[in-house]
Structure formats: C-alpha cells, structure tokens
Length: 157
Image 1 (tube, one colour):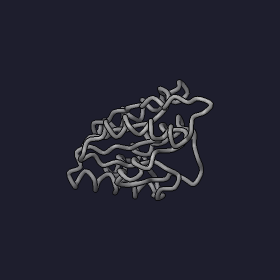
Image 2: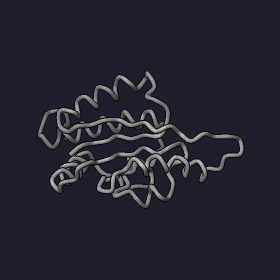
Image 3: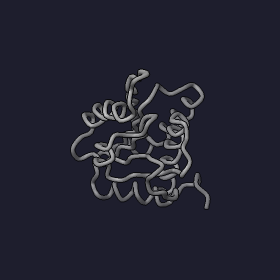
C-alpha cells in the first residue's frame, strides 16, 4: 500500500518543514509515502467560500484514482485514538487498498464533492488547527500508528 499525504495551501513553512520531513522519512520505512500540496484557489474581495472550495476541489478530484481510499481530515469527522488509527491503517493494507490518501482541506474546508467522495472523515479534535501544524501532526500520527502496528517502542500507553 502507498500513502499520499495531501494538503491545500502553501509549501511547508520552515517552522514545520523539518518535522514533516523527519516523520515522512520515518513513515517510509513502513510504506511508500509522499506529500502533494495543492495550490489554494485565488481569492478576491468578491470571492465566495463555496466558489473557492469548488475551485480547490477540481485538481484534487482529478488527481484521485478511482480505487484510492480517501481519508478527509475535518473537525466534523470521527475522532479515533492512535491505536484505532493503527488498526484502521493495518485494515486498509490487509484489504488490498493500493493507495491511502489523507487530505487536509483548504482554509474554508472542502467542497461537498470531496466530502461525498471521502471514504472516511477523521477529526483530530473539535478544535481547529492551522493547516501547517496539521501537516506535522498528521505525519507524526501516521508514524505513531505504524510503530504501533509493528509493536515498536515509540508509542506508550
């Protein structure tokens, strides 16, 4: 199984770049993994949120393959523990999912087409986090889940 970590926004800021790269490298010991950062929709004074979300949805929907398993990160999603995330990832790998895609939406969230396409919607918290910080947290949690699957020492209960 291959993992794709997708985000709408600017390139990794320097304050998270090192951490994101470190955890991504760690994940790669378990699964092939790569980041894809989609350019946010251009905003003007007259831009409507729905218009922005629709414009951001198009490149994502075009990049998704028919059989990709899409996990949308959204504060309205289901909250799970780190061991549950490990079980979730392991289950996808065991069920022959070829590509597991995690998506962090844009500043206004995602278009309804993406919500409908998502196979699972996951919430880290009822709190809202900056997109840059979410990238680091996502990479760390996926690495933690991988270490749980392999029964390694990183995660302590």
